Length: 215
Image (cartoon, rainbow, N blue to C red; front, top):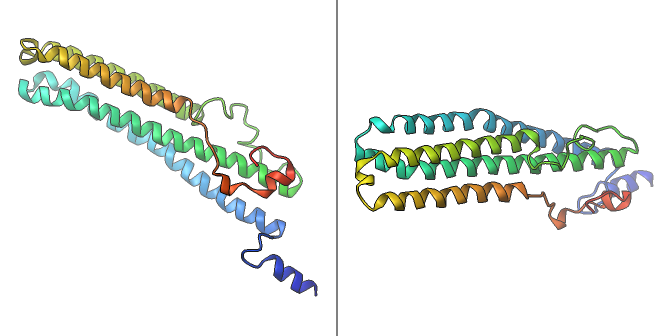
């Protein structure tokens, strides 16, 4: 009779799993989340400086280009800079999601185990202070600074380009740079107020049973 009861606990769709099985499932997700977190950090730490350096090198060499080619680059670089900061914010936002889910898993495992076993993220002193953690938010600010400098330098190079300076297109280009700057600030502003929200359908009964936030 006892074996039949245990079999019932592990039947799919019953929603009743033994505590050890629940903890094992959560720890597997925990490992997966940390793997994704390391991927995001790798992208931010390695790929972003490479792309940013390439854009800066193109801008630095723009003065040696023929003027028609230079204008093409001056038009394209601001859009590339927007793409760069958008990509950084997306990775930092995903990093925020991973950190918050890791936090949840730690508290779930602790609740199931009846003692504090996992503490790194759930008791981190800087949790929730900045989206994406200190490294993610700091990288976003650094990239924003580099983008603003790049946009300002584009304006200087444009002012020294005869084809633009001697026509009405120069003021239009400056307006273009202002619009791109506003876009960059808007992207970072939206990231700054971003908060992770767990879908309602994934609400865990463990939270409700334990009185933990996030039920």
